[in-house]
Image (cartoon, rainbow, N blue to C red):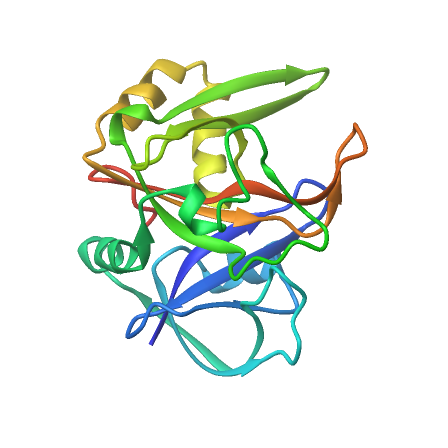
Length: 228
C-alpha cells in the first residue's frame, strides 16, 4: 500500500508533483509525468490518500531525483487516519537536514550543485515543534510565504520556500484574512512536527546560482493540522 505524503505546488504552472511512501518499508516514489490541479480536484487527492498501483522504476533516473517512477493501473482509495499517517512519517523520519542530504545542504547553503551526488531528493525530517513559524514577504503585487524551523539536529533554516500545496493554501488564507496571529498559534500548538524536505528540479536563481534547491514539500503538525 502506498500513502501520499507530498502534494507539491509550482509557482509558474498548474502542475502538481506527488510523492508517496510504501507503508511497509517507507520507500519513496514520485510518479511522472506530473498531474495538474484539475486531476487533483476531481479525484479529491490529498495527503494521506491510499494508492494501489504497479510501480515502474525509471531506468537511470537523474540524480538526485532517484525516486522518479511511473504508475500503471493506479487506483485512488480512501485516506488513512491521522494516527496512521503520523506513524508513517515517524517511521520514515530522521533528525536533520544534514543527514538527509549527505551534509551538502546547510543553513548557509540551500542548493545542491549540479554534478554533486546525493542518494535522495526528499526525506522526512523531525522538527523542534516550538521552532516553526511563517513569514510574509511582500514583493510588488506578489505575497510570498517562507518557513522557519529548527530540525532535531539543532540546525535552523530560515526563509524556506513552502511548496506544500495544502499547507501553503491554508497559510495564505490566514494571511489574506489578516489572521497571522491565529496561524502562529496553530503552529505553536504542535507537539510533533515533521517536514518533508525536498530538492527542486534544476533551477537557476536570480544571482545565477544553478542547482537543486531545498524547499518544504510537506509540513505536518500533530495534533491540529492534518488535511483530511
